[in-house]
Length: 52
Image 1 (cartoon, rainbow, N blue to C red):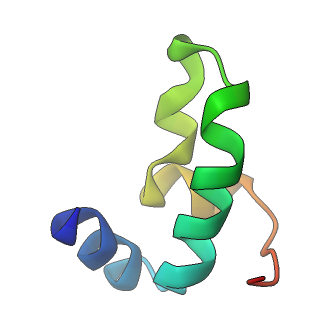
Image 2 (spheres, helix red, strand yellow):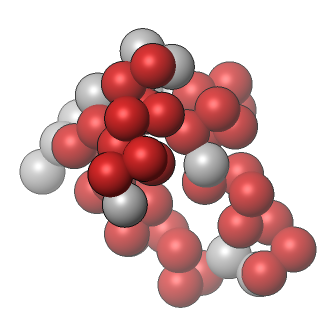
């Protein structure tokens, strides 16, 4: 978990925002698309979402 949060920070992503979005979306994605939630994929394809 620490390495994923560190990766988010290295990619210029707010780790709290990223983690909240991942937790909200992970159950709706098929296994073949889970890689889209990794920090380096998320920043390129996902618009920034406000943290709750």
